Image (cartoon, rainbow, N blue to C red; front, side, top):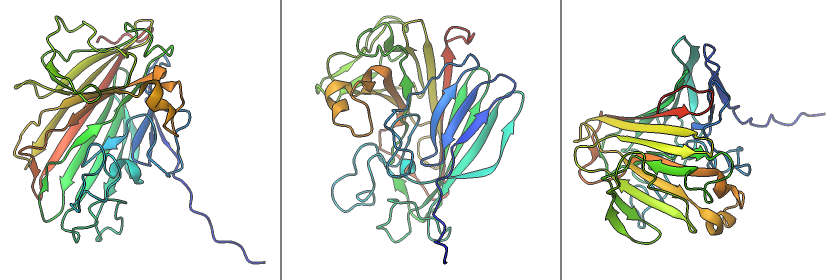
Length: 335
């Protein structure tokens, strides 16, 4: 009797536990997607759909998918990004763990990497396959969790021969709204801290500037339709720093994000924010998302979106960092 060839195995999720505090985070090698962040009291900050696919057949619906080098569908035509999946190729490829995990007094963590190009033998699916190999990059994600926060740090290095122009990159962060109150209780689901930002409402077409009074004023609530808004910061405000209400018992998540670049033409790229919730109609059309799950989440996505003047030259790199801090019952973290 001849034995069948061994079947390829799906890499197991990587669970990182901070022994000193009991907090933890989980990273799926597919897309280097963070799928869980649990605080010392056991509070889960992230949302993952119960219908999300974890077999590598498509990007994981929830957690913190990575977006690069495009946000949204690929542009029409035959350009460098025309053959990419929506939101780029980072979230649709398997990443490899680099070195060993660490568990220190201050934090626990690990690093994952995705290398492209014929020289590595690991051409990423959908990654610049039409330019003869001149455009390439190395990507690494460092994930750390401690007593008070969870940090994701994405480093993009241009290892190719040509510029990476007009790139976009985001942390597509799905925050869990506890109590399933995203669309029924504006006090339980809102985002504060975007006063002065220019708003581009992709659903209604409205464009305006937020002029709310005070950082604690709720400026977003899930109404009777899909929410999809881009918030562009005013001049002189390169970082995002928002507080998101994520439940009816006073739970809040403080989300901060910043970027530094070398060889980009912008030393500190401005970080915008996207707020998204599909609401009922769009939810029903998504095969990897439950019909009523829109009540259980809100996406708050910091990102480098404006492509004008952005050019990551060969040898250059950009480092993009997001920090989540939770303030809820039994978690004495100030937000």
